[in-house]
Image (tube, rainbow, N blue to C red; front, side, top):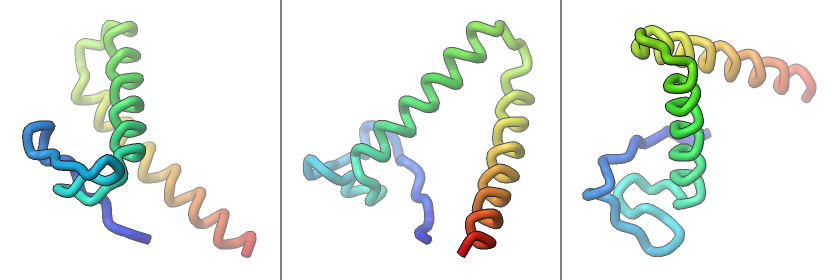
Length: 78
């Protein structure tokens, strides 16, 4: 496994056509993350949630649990 390196912002991004030279992630990975963030943002706006921070905290907690569970389940299959 590798460590996630967050974006430093659009102004800091330098790329070679395949990889961001600042964070080291592939541009396809960055694009997919942006897509997922846009989907979550659209969902929050559509639902008219006033407590966005609470929704974001909920998503973060659930994501960590889901990834741990899937990794544990995958390890048991090996």
